[in-house]
Image 1: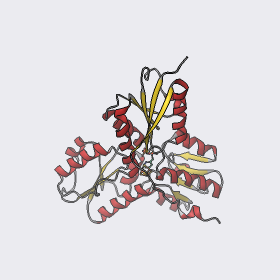
Image 2: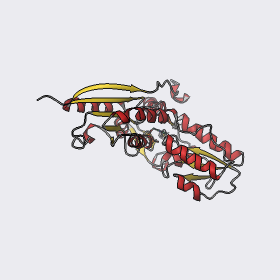
Image 3: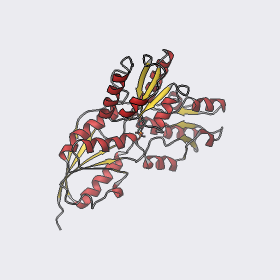
Length: 316
Ligand code: 2E6
Ligand code: F3S
């Protein structure tokens, strides 16, 4: 039987960003340096395949520092941690390595600097997400207020409307965030913020690439995890930019083939925490069912790299 023809548009950039690459390397190098077990507070990045692979090598994933023994190293995930976490590790004289993405740390520093200048901070982010918890936790309770939507801006209860700054989560929708920033500036004309927002290069580039592929394709599949903020934003961007069917898939066995019945083209991308191996698995699953033509749609070239902390670069 002949297979139906299908064009796969591969969005580029997709998949691992420099912060994810560094965070995974930190766990691998810590295991080499100190042997197993090495504890990791929270999923190092939001991907089950990555986490399972590191667990097989001897990493132990926990949600809180309380679950770690004093005498084993602990790594803090790429999403960042409240100040209280390294402080507790120091009190307990634990060896710890902070795998917070440098672009998240930059937002932490920004928030601290605003607070030193006497400003109250409004964070644009998703409630309960570890990055939001970590950034808000750089300052005492009440110093950082959270807004999630344009509607929240109308009700946020600030100390002094003339002494405000805003920061953002790094993985937000670029377009939705513009609207929230505009609402903040309308209500608080004196608010200070970063030049654009704190959304990182990887989030921005992956969303731009989806905007380029989504209108071409009958469906968009985003390889990524349900708890991955940046991956979920890619699904939303696809849906808002002309793709009637946009779905998150963790890996090939998640694909709903019945929903794809009759399609002629599919766009594929991957969140910043999703390994390329899983993208290849999805492509292979299409090849098994269709006569596939692959077209890469590249909207940016990324050359960003982050060094691992010095403690892991030292041999002895
Ligand atoms: C750290 C900061 C930003 O859910 P989210 O998109 O934040 O996280 P991951 O692990 O899916 O992506 C990488 C990342 C780490 N993004
Ligand atoms: Fe960092 Fe952005 Fe990746 S904040 S971990 S470079 S998605």
